[in-house]
Image 1 (cartoon, rainbow, N blue to C red):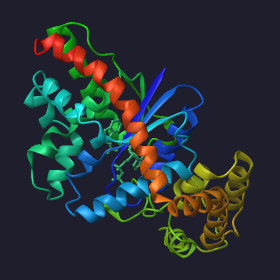
Image 2: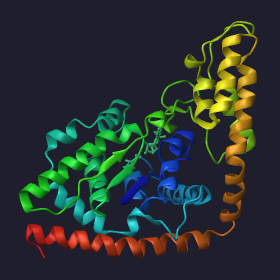
Image 3: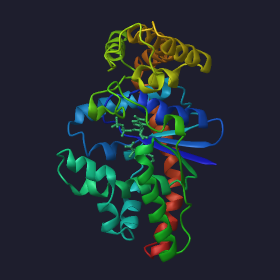
Length: 320
Ligand code: ADP
Ligand code: TRP
């Protein structure tokens, strides 16, 4: 089974990225052959400062490696180090109707938030389809917001296969329901664009500030509270053990348990989960040359696979 996923180096990674996607990638290393890449071509649709892009790229690499991505097991690389993906994007764009791309939520959302409707933003899903199809991927771990991009990918693959002959495998999205949409500190989906994140590589002080800032109602301390409708609990249960989760739920229901206490408990569990990660990240950050070597080595392995699919696609359309 081949697992593939990518993440854009477009800002600091947060708990939503970790629970929604990165954790699955690290766990799936035990079950399949993993390809994980840093989607820097995609990030160019939002990041326009070269130094920032370089720094973000290094940050994503450090985060993934510190979380346990093993470069011996997983092919870990930068998207731009496999330029074959650009040629495949063109070959796929031949079969992808404009009308389908016009319906893409993520494109419509970005435009609605005032972003300029550039060609890159519009064709973003075709590049993403090329990322996935280039490696004949079976499953793609992502958060729920990427589901439609996976549907577009399958659709493109079916259209190409029909028109030019069987060339691509059809991939499946892998979206565990419990973490499909991780809530942010304000209760909306956690996202860097909403400023409601808890950053996984933040300093203890920054993490504390984000967690203490989680929005709650103003029910008095003594009042019994419904755990299912409060943000602190909704985030806590994603990190805590089932026993710890049950204990917090019971305390809320009983009354006499305030949000401040619950936030302190969330902070404690957060630090327990991410403490070792912070330590490993700091060690890796001291050796950026090693990180760059890992990525280049990954790119070399990725390119070999990419070449096979691209050659098949070129032959299928008649430009071999
Ligand atoms: P952001 O919304 O902060 O810009 P990205 O769009 O870069 O995050 O998402 C990177 C990956 O993390 C994707 O697979 C996405 O589905 C996943 N992801 C992001 N936010 C969440 C969330 N709140 N819950 C679950 N998964 C998420
Ligand atoms: N669009 C994805 C996101 O914003 C990133 C991405 C690019 C990706 N190419 C991919 C994810 C291929 C999975 C597979 O998170």
